[in-house]
Image 1 (tube, rainbow, N blue to C red):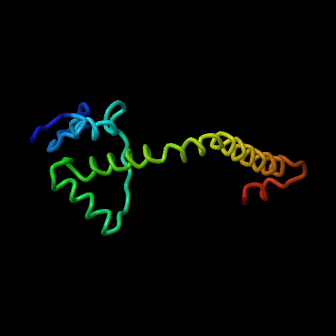
Image 2: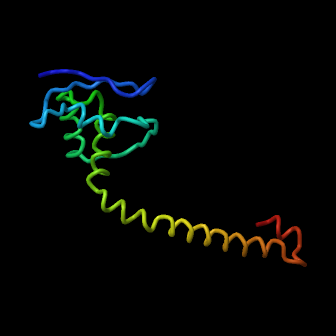
Image 3: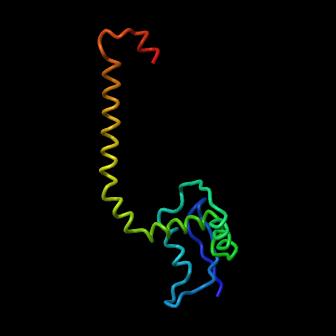
Length: 130
């Protein structure tokens, strides 16, 4: 059975062909759409792909599952993130701590550099040459 569906809004509106229905009765659009619904695809990411990855992307586009390489890549990235939920859950537990430490390091470096700049007796010419 061949159908088509639309997704997105405005400039990001797209159309994809649907060529299959799963055993459970879910249409392919439901499976593919789970990574394109909601917030849409408003961000551009440039990526370099190897020959094998590009060949697989092109297979999906040629099969009319996706209207473009971009649409296909968005799906594959979404599916990859979904398949690695445990990894991202573990990373999330530490991401905030890492950010705080980086902020503290930047602040410490700024404080040291600022203190040297503000040190009394420092010649104005020396301050301008750095």
